[in-house]
Figure 1 (cartoon, rainbow, N blue to C red):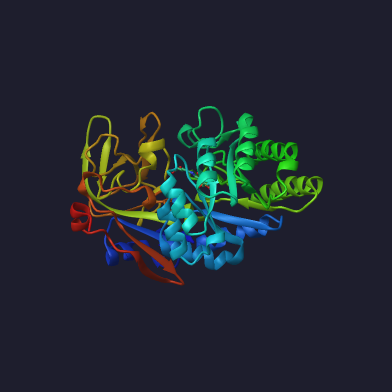
Figure 2 (cartoon, rainbow, N blue to C red; figure 1 turned 60 degrees about the vertical axis):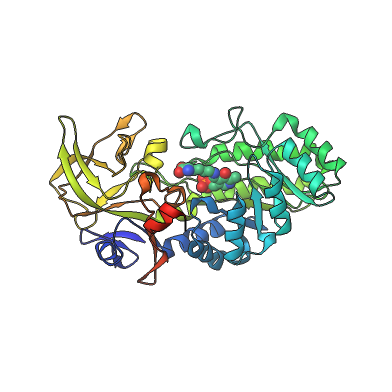
Length: 420
Ligand code: LLP
């Protein structure tokens, strides 16, 4: 758990201030138990079986995190990999090839050959890819992704269904996908969709499920080999106090009922696959940083820290809100309006912002040297980090059973400069 006790922030049972002292900042810290509890929440609330949770590794690719998810989910979990690198990472974490699906976009033949050599199922994102896949691996198993013309998500950049989305085979073109598959004697064992990311209502997810299931029903005679239907990821988490988490019980019952009813009419029980990324890891992580500069303009009091959008790009990329706390004074009656900014040489490098620009936050009075925690940073934090401005990426630490250990060393200056 990430919790506040006696006005101080704790990760697991370890004080965040102590972690900052011990490992230095900027630092990503994750709580193992939070990740485990999120895996359990899905397994317990989605009664439908067979059920597979293909963790969307792009959310957080740290090997230790993949291993935690594997350990907690056992045979129920697999990996949604979007690149040869993620396939390799999943295999290194101990996932078997048949527990991995390669769902990428604008894929090269070479990347597909890599997946095939590793015995990983390829999920084709376009008619072009399906054709090329059929040529390079005829008479094999395949999955393809449908764009169901239903999209949802916390920002337009992450909505992946509808005519503005580059993903999947357009629902109206599915007939051609079956022709290509038949030509190359491909066995369609899975059909996939993913409508977007950061969805906090069940309705859109169900709408998209219905579209995909209707496509399957309509083409059932061509889908004799079908083993699973993959409805993608996208389950959101609250970032703001006034956001309600998705009711997992309602979600789990609704998706299970819809799918079970469908399977009855289809004539056999298929496996349901979902691909949670953010849901499993977002709330487990914090980015710790240290305040080094405080300055004032006529409009804002800027509190400058030793990290920036190179390490957490979500506020800059999507105007995303991340809660921020001073780890030793989480609450106070005396608050002031501040803008927390990073050390990157761009004016957009402000963590307290929304889509239209800087949005000051009320925080307890902060002084130089204080450690701040940027919360809900476990998903799409480190995995989207860069070395922009020639600044190394932070270390990552995992807290398990009250103990903290480094799960990725702080990147060295030499690595940034020479790549070794
Ligand atoms: N499956 C597929 C095919 C995906 O493309 C994604 C995410 C997921 C599953 C997992 O989605 P999730 O459960 O995490 O919402 N960087 C953005 C999010 C990008 C999501 C990309 N695809 C952010 O920080 O909000």
